[in-house]
Structure formats: C-alpha cells, structure tokens
Image (cartoon, rainbow, N blue to C red; front, side, top):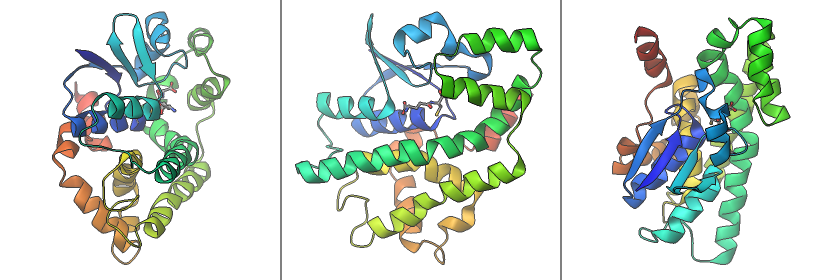
Length: 249
Ligand SMILES: N[C@@H](CCC(=O)N[C@@H](CS)C(=O)NCC(=O)O)C(=O)O
C-alpha cells in the first residue's frame, strides 16, 4: 500500500489527501511533525530532497514529491473518476492555474500559518540549536523562512500584505466560475483541488471574502466542495482547533 508522509495543516499535503480521497485510493498515513523538523531528517530528504511535505512512497525506494506531480500521477494510475480534462488545451490551462496557486498563494499562506504554528517553538531555540537546524534545510528560501520565524517574526504589516495577496485567489476564481460550477467547467478537477486548501484557510482567516456580496460564485463553489464525501475524508480541520488540541496534548 502507498504511504503518504504529510502534515495535517499543510496545504500541499491537503491537496494530495483530497485527491487520494476522490480516487478512493487507500494509503497509510504518516504525519510529519514540522515543529520537530522531521522533514529535514536524512530519511525524509531521501524521499523528498526539497525537505517539504508531502512525499508519497509508492514502494520501498520509490518516492514522489511535489503535490501537483503526485496528483497527476494518481490520476494516471487511477483514471476514475477523471480529475483532469481530456482536452490538451484545458489540461494546460489547469496546469497553469495549479502553478499559479503554488507560486502566488502558498508563499503568502506560509507567512500566516508559520507565524501561528511554528514561531512559538522556533523562537525558543538558542543560537546553536538554530544554526544546527538551519544547516539541515536543503533550500535557501526555506532556510530564510525558518530564520524569520525564529529571530525576525513577520510583522503585522507583512501578515496583512500576505492576506491581501492571498485574497487574489477568490477574485481570480470568481472570474473562472462565470459560466460553470467548477473552475474548468462542468467537472471537478485538479484545479479545484489545488484551490481547496487555500479557500479553506481563507474561510477561517477572512470569511467575508467568501460571502455572497464579495464573491457569490466562490461561495457556491465552496459549499459544493464541502458537500463532496472526499472533503470530509481528507480531514481539512480548522487550523485553530488543531493547534489548540496540540497545545493541550
Ligand atoms: N511545491 C511543494 C510545496 C510543499 C511545501 O511547501 N510544503 C510545506 C507545507 S504546505 C512544508 O513542508 N513546509 C515546511 C518547511 O518548508 O519547512 C508541493 O506542492 O509539494
């Protein structure tokens, strides 16, 4: 059976869980504790050299990383229900949208999420601990992000700007939903799945952005997403509830 190494709160992991659930593919779940940098261990880096979740183990020694790649792989090996348009042009449009969410949503959500979930722990590390932890991070971009939350927390202004930028997603989706219920037309696709984790966080951080007077089509889309059985199976639990439960544990 496949094994998914993931984070419960991670948007990229949520995307893969949503896809696995839509496909009805059974898998073993291995939750990675990012507060303990389990994803920077040599064992994890052997699965995903970028040192980020998720990673999917297909068989011993056979791994995949990058949530968008993993989702396309799952659609290849389990074509039903199809989650990509058959038409090559529509498929290319889908890939560009997914890429846009990777480049324009994830970095902004990172600022908001890490400030809540990882900063309390990272800010406690002494300089030696911090240097040792930074040395294990394979990319300069994420080393900088960890350094920020450990020593120079994102300011309120930076967080407000990040939220503003994240809110370009519902605006963009409102246009895409002009003629059909799903982002690429009549069928739910990997484009919708790419957006779901970000809209789920926007529903928590800025619920007004999903109201009918702001983005009525996105509101209807979000209601329809939440009614899909796969949505419940993927367990996109509220961020604050998960953090509270972790603190209590
Ligand atoms: N492009 C990657 C992004 C993966 C990613 O950034 N994962 C985040 C969680 S959403 C992560 O592992 N963060 C921890 C870190 O960077 O140390 C994908 O889609 O798989």
